[in-house]
Image (cartoon, rainbow, N blue to C red):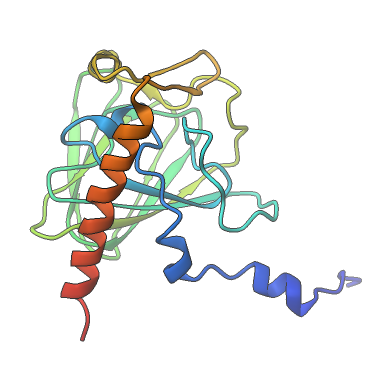
Length: 208
């Protein structure tokens, strides 16, 4: 095969170091991220990973035919009920997670508990939510079908989630882009401080 040559410089640009990635989190990547029970830190590794917040910056910018995200949440927290137009799959890196789903907004029809190294693939149009149910924070690794950012609603939220987010001033427009409240910078700072504190405590507890 006549493959193009790849330089060492390009290869190093395709490596993501956790020590760097952990400083690039977006604490309010989605309109539900402000809500109690749904607070978490999200990281864009490749592509937009369905973000409603344009502040994300993928760690690897080279085009891929898939999109990769990571994130962590404290016990009792995780993404609220929503769906996408594409496949969304999760590999559990740490902790114990409850995934729940249904074919309609507001109607849960099934659930499963996933532990470290378990994997789940969620089809388009199926509403889903998930939360950490263990005693420690949980980490996930997400793989998504390729999709264009800010080209339509993404995610599609349960209307009750949208209503609650609006009480904090968070909405998404028809293109799927976050409409931020006037005190967004203050809320972002508070959430970043809290979640980075959670991360530091978790790292301290896992040092040998």
